[in-house]
Length: 393
Picture (tube, rainbow, N blue to C red):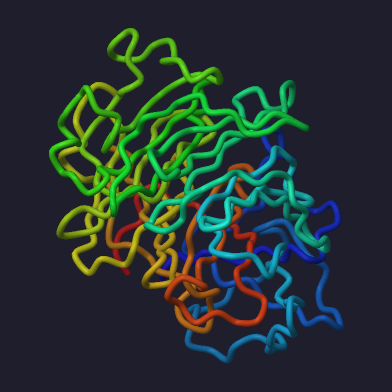
């Protein structure tokens, strides 16, 4: 049976998800028994549970009758308990707020408006800040991350396109956005980017090539690169080249960056010239040999990583694909697909992990998809364990 991503029952969470960093999954079932989370109706249902806690196995998985149907959205009201934010526009960037997972909360960025909103279960999205952006190309607000020391400084970072360049801005509480990295080339295409934490005290930024493939190999240009920097916008300590933010080159139109919470490795998705790809970041080396490729170009976007797998969401195919990692660090078997068609939420964009068990993803259905009345939405998901080497079906 395929490993499947399970939708977290977010709307009725009440102190049942385990605390990040200290709880354990002593009763967690093996990966082969993961299945879609049973949907709850607005009238009620079973008490929500920690993943793997007290849930019976489903022999054979899939192929059975669908759980009770969830009513379709009614305006901005979405009855799916996994949805924690509605009626937004093209959620291409997500930064999950620290937490124990009981009440998943995140900042989400709208690509074309530059609005940054706070979303949480059973609460209307709250405006946190608006960053001036130029969303006329594929750019706009495409990256969002919290400070590595967010608990102390409450700083937010955003990657945005302006009429003249792409740049990183820093937003302090009660202050206007202030640029800390400017002059990243802007073009008619490939302005998208992704921001993330490397889990080792620094920020990472993946930039597009601005429509000029020659810039990816030009180390004097910040286009087509992975940059590593501190909260002031200066090169981070430990970079391969002292005084330089560039830690890797070779990107075209990146969609996501993600690292496990133990900082054991960083992954970056990219829409290359002829296929979609996933790279494992090796600081100081070009991004030339993908760890995985998708010739069918599903539109790789955000990702979430653990030590045993990488979950990548797709903005064209509208699904999520889990790549399980083998003990030697290679991918074992083909991607295992979830959130397909009516089992999902349409096109998916930005993604970030609250902790190892819970992630938040945004939808981008208002950009070429088939939006429902509550789109675009923020959705809480529980990525499955990669299985540490599970092979093909």
